[in-house]
Image 1 (cartoon, chains in turn cyan, green):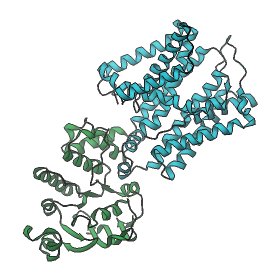
Image 2: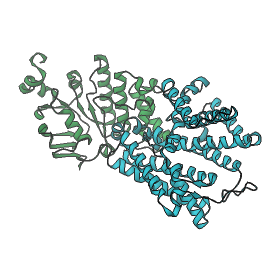
Image 3: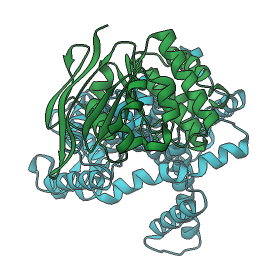
Image 4: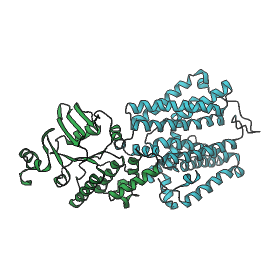
Length: 334
Length: 241
């Protein structure tokens, strides 16, 4: 199993990865509370970025509405907890299928009726906007007034109910990011992964070699949506409050996709690297601004915009392919 | 010899223009069959009806005794028909090897098996040394051979080649002819080709169908067809004979 996982990875890459993983595991020992919250955000975006990248980077289907799956996961688990006292891990068993079903709905509508490219992206926006407006008026989840979870006590960590110190969430998201990375790598090396790449590259040619493109595109959306819903569940139990205007908002969808774009669409390291660069630098920026006593609303958004612009102009394939070449990790830049 | 592919009176009309008009022919198992004709004769349309890109407006296409007209291209391929594109379309960002692996995975479930088979095919098509390169970096002759390799990777019983010699130099054409002849002889692969390059057609095909304005004007062995006055008049031109 381990042998298969590390198969084909150059020694240097493997060493680098293990060092990074070790650093991440021991980080809470030295990091302060603030740094931990930043790292939580980074791993959150690395994880959802990986989920989005599976659909866009591998299967070539541009979703601009991934907030839908975050929101459905978050709301489903939170509502089950608030109304029935059902814990997040059991809630997950409902939340993930709900989001996967929503993904299947979007996918079916689009792929059955040959809605592709930009029109597919618009459809994903439309469905997540529907959800935003719908949840604004859904009294079961308290509508636009927001759904609140009983606030966590930091005194002890209850992993089963996800009540506890941010460090617990840090490790959950770290594990999720690592598992997502490994899972995507395995998919990419499997039959499904090759078929996704073929569809991304040329759908008609993919059909000509016998690939049922509808089926494999559906698989991509459903897995990606289900994966994203897990992040939503963690989001709900970490922040303890949910507002439709926040979780389902298009800016949330955009924030999800910025990391992979900056890091490198279609690469395994891109979403992780992108999350570190974007979220890391943005937090440093706001930290620096607050030290200077300057308060500029929207500074983060402007920063994101500048980053995106720089990457598109200078490194259109993202930072990772360039970075990998610099590190001499030959062949690992894909 | 029974017919592997049977095309019976297929027609295709595009906005009132009859692109293919009741064309019938049969390709026996193990044969190399060519469809020739001037530009606009309906060759590619005919080809696309067999490959499942278009459903015929009339007539029937049968493969190995079963109707395949109206099936989607992926289903047609899974039945055992591999194809190339007239304007080549390999998966550009993938490596040469991965292009072929995609095809090989149709009937193989593990990437490892698919890779081994892909390597064998790449050797056969003189592409093994270029296997790590991106398909987009290949020259046209290499891309044409890559398309053949990718189609072969799906284990077809019938290979459809759409002008696979176009744009090749004579030596490259001869090499492609040799590869195809070898495949046909060694594996019994049936080949249906659309071709303009008469040099290749004459070297390869056991039977030829000539289309003109969407309708068949001649069919027979290569010797018969090149002596047919109608073919000479409408396509080959007098000086070629």
